[in-house]
Amino acid sequence: MILYLSGNFPQLSKVEKEQAMADRIVEMGLEYHRLMTFYYIKDCQTILTVKRRLDENRQKRITG
Image (cartoon, rainbow, N blue to C red; front, side):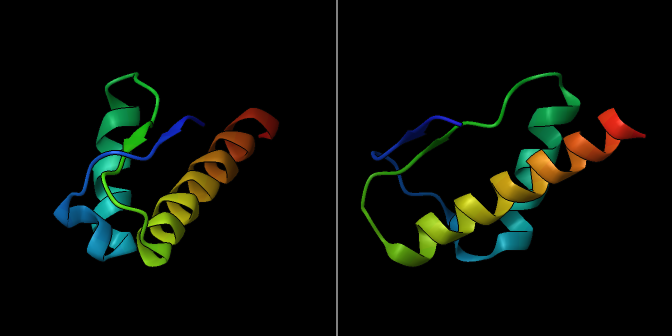
């Protein structure tokens, strides 16, 4: 995962919103990368939670 610290978006307010956006990106065959403007612990935690979930889902698909 590449985390750029230079963009703030409304999806970061809730993990569910960020997850929905990330799922749409993955469905398009792209990788989830996130850009943030300001360093907010909660926003970073949201991004890291979504990335962990994506990795877990990918691992489940790989292992069956």
